[in-house]
Length: 324
Image (tube, rainbow, N blue to C red; front, side, top):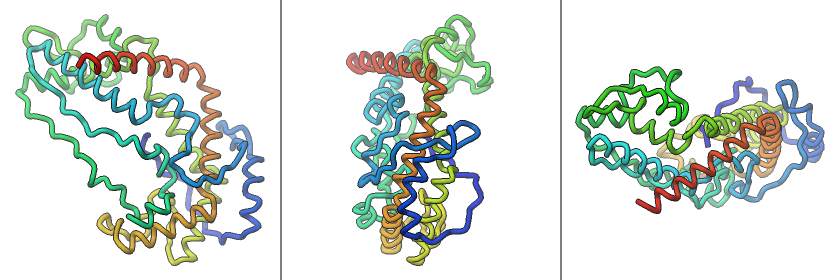
């Protein structure tokens, strides 16, 4: 998932959480404010009260590789990069990246910390320090470095958008051992061979852009803003002052080494309790789902191309991984 953009909407004064207001929140959400296009807020079909955010699945996820698939695709791209390097006489293996965790749901913290057990056990810690670190790149001689990444002087706007275009152009990005280096080097060639072999292949980044767009729209939606205000008021009742439910640590005065300490745990427990009291996560999920569906309706052809491209990429990856 793309990093989540911060809302640009000015913060509004926090309001107290009244039971009557919460009782009518679902009805207001169902009504909506419009179509959800550039001029209105979409109606919402239903507002869940999720016991666990990790089980939430958004509509666009059908067009985005999951963690296991991304691990497979990453391995395939490394194999393609290695194959390209060997054409130039370099015995080189791109270091394997740490595997993306697939056990935790991809949306577990999309709307901030929500798991009461995790909050009570480790506060705001995401245990990043316990995960394998990215291995360092081996030192390369200048010629090998050129083959791997190109000269770095090519304008990104003029670079080939697919492998078919790159081969037809005959252009190079420097020369090594009598051979033209692919524009952008072997890294770029491997990406194009896997994700964009032809012009017909869908651009996976376009789907990510739709995902980020829907998230940003939902964060600024009046219903999510109202639920966020209610969460903030709930936090204030317990002595905590924060307006960002996704990453409130800085507002709460917590340094990274305090995330899993007593102060971090206490704040995290209050945070999760307020999210559940106001159903912020259920409201936000329902609203973002509505924005995603509207974007999907307007970009059906793009999404169909992206799905076909993903299927072809996964098929190629399966063959490469089986061989290597």
